[in-house]
Length: 404
Image 1 (tube, rainbow, N blue to C red):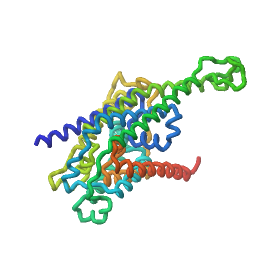
Image 2 (cartoon, rainbow, N blue to C red):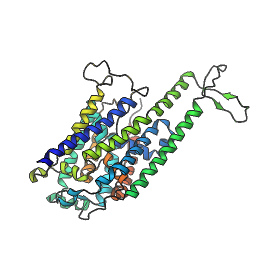
Image 3 (tube, rainbow, N blue to C red):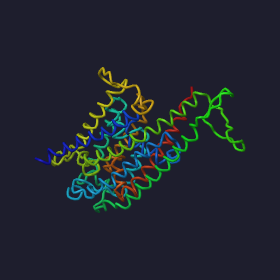
Image 4 (cartoon, rainbow, N blue to C red):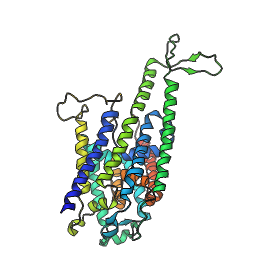
């Protein structure tokens, strides 16, 4: 009885912490919490992440998430008891990780979101596009996890997705190495950002040529001689980008740490928790785990509250609603209302992969930080491949559209 009560409480509390992470990003830096987009875009477009000032915050978000997960939270999740003891909870095979990683990478990129982007953030702002995506991938995940569950007659066809071999859960030194790799990349990106600021925000301005540009010295010219060829508006745009990029760093670091804590408190980093919710046959067994539902509810409630302070997403009159975030110049919130084949197809692919592996991008980052060998060796490489394939697919589909 105590466990049955405690599980929804921790799920709701963990979800609320995840929602707080989304609220920090939204209200302070004007961006949404999308674990799949942050991870895939950062890894696939690594050069951009290192050199584009507007992408530096994503690396800092990942670094703070990885460090907290590895050093503080990881030791408490070195053992998944239910995965070992409950015969109705599957252990994912190498083939399962490979297929699921690709489908999740492809699906989240094609459909532009996962449980955090569409679920926690999209549903909180009552986006019809996100609601359709969530209903689609939740339904697909339920069907997939149920039909491939151990002991189900249909599962004999999909036995290759499961294994009886108990995995080595975590290699903390491996996770530490992964974490420090991204910390090093983040430091390089921060150096690049500060260097960009120094090069492009000099105070010397030439008024004689009729145009303005941050001072860039021309080779072989005497000291104090500069070349200027930008308009005042272009200079202001550059300054805004640099200002916003720098001021997004602190919220990103805070949000990444909070997100890791939320996933840990809710225990969504345990695959048995996810399978315990997605396998509908567990209703009959009396071991169904409602934690995932309470996580989504807790996260959406807190995220929804934050949107009440953002114009025009508030449902009620609020004199404190803001037209711009607290620390940067503007909000960057998806406004697309298009519900098309890409959205549905991406959600279906994500749902199948989620139902196979019990992993979505946020928990997969956590497991990478803790040094989960199956996730690092099999799930993440195919996730990256799937994301890359989806990007190419979207570009190809875009080229097929008639140009006006």
